[in-house]
Image (cartoon, rainbow, N blue to C red; front, side):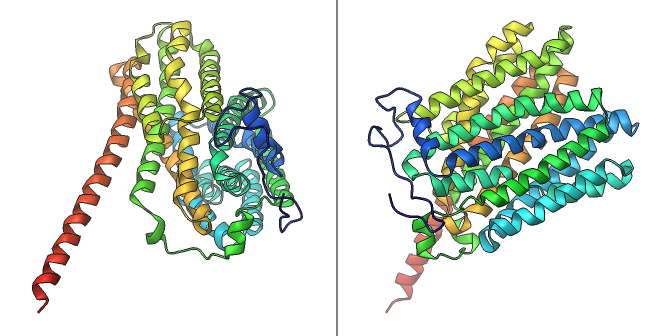
Length: 431
């Protein structure tokens, strides 16, 4: 194994594996063991997985703080969540660009300090002051998702990234299964202010751990090339736009499904079983992500997203909690594979010197989809019934994927016609 500039060793594949991307002779777990055996990957996965737990709890804790401690309603809580979401959507590419140009540690110092200040202020300021602070807190969010995916692209050979990103997506599922539940317990059993301060301390600790870990954002080969980030117009391709639209479409479906599950069980008088159904949904996603990362070949990202969308549309036909949990199996199995596949594609489609900003755009697409999917499904469920919430989320996700493909094909046709016209004009002008 070749020596790395930081004193570790360069990734190498185990001699007993059947990569690229395949199942090893030792069973379906071997691809994941191989990924975790690569230098620095295990510590990266562990730190980012733990750090995502408080991040996953943040939304529900802010909601409970507004409703229980500040005397506001759910509309006010939704406006606060929107402020954080919009800030995060704008901030992710900016923090990624800063990482590309200034290095990861400077970004971590800025964002970890900002998160410590934000969550401290969130616990003590009134609602009206909290709104602009929430936007700034979202703008300077700790780039946990972008850093994890950017570093995996640097640490893992390209032919094994499907497994690495599947592992990352499964870790996200676990974090989002634990985080909200822990946040609700602390906010209701202790106080919302204690929960806010705990999130702030956890985010600050996560920033410190990542600073000390200092995961690489470029591989040895990429560092040797000494590339500078090219202009955005050189790497924002049609394919990248389609991937980002597919990413947004996937999270429209996921956020819409989340809301629709609660609405359906409230209608059937089984609201107390919402957590169990959502846990089952997360389990199907974990299983799907595990299989996706173990396959020799996998379906394309856009196909996975369309299947996720189409499988979601009829879920509302289920009547009770256990039929709903079973109806979610096909769509749930597509969740983690879709998100893993889009992350992998982004890492392949952009140059290493712009990978941080591109992963920031990927995070923004995830955020935008969530911001659209939840209110869309909620509005449809209120007016047309909970079953239509699933249908609306699935149809919107599918439409975004189709729109992306059509836009790319139309753009390519326009460019061909333009190029043909320029050649014709040049031929006519030639003597």
